[in-house]
Length: 229
Image 1 (cartoon, one colour):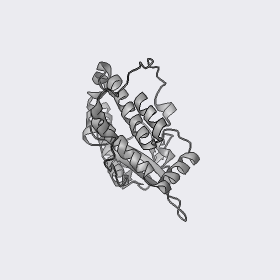
Image 2 (image 1 turned 90 degrees about the horizontal axis):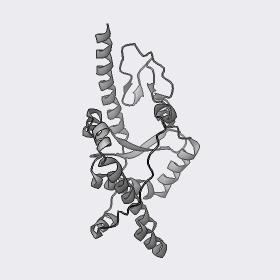
Image 3 (image 1 turned 180 degrees about the vertical axis):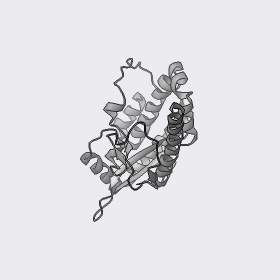
Image 4 (image 1 turned 45 degrees about the vertical axis):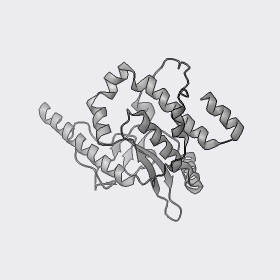
């Protein structure tokens, strides 16, 4: 990474620096998480993780408000495929960078949305019509489908999506050791601009994912309730 910082100080090329930080971050993740025996056993090889990856349920979303007169939150983004592949993660990072920075107008609206919506980690932040940070349903009642095409069904409870501080505990990690990823000249291919452009239309895929996840919840929860009767 030191090489790329030196290049930036000489040229001022922000794009190359941004892509370099993407490569740096994903190499860091690769060596300390993906190749870690503990994480492999407990997370990466778990059925839940593999199913999410197989069905492509992992979406990265950028919300912003549609221009007046209708204030409506729009989502753009991309889908993570093959999370355990360093190559695929780097390409995804490049696509997301292109999506954010290829249009200054879109970037300005995304920044404006982020500035006016404090981040809690709850999906309620961007779609309060569909998600709630408070569990509105009863834990032991039979689960019924609540959404269709990203709209809440009549008389249905909103989907529970807690704030991050209530969903996950703080974790302490070991200090990162120093290691530079820039030790192979072939990495230069990632720095070239190969038009990593995407349209960013993610809403339809995201809605389908929510419906599929809801079907899985429906099956699991109702089966468990019947077994307890």
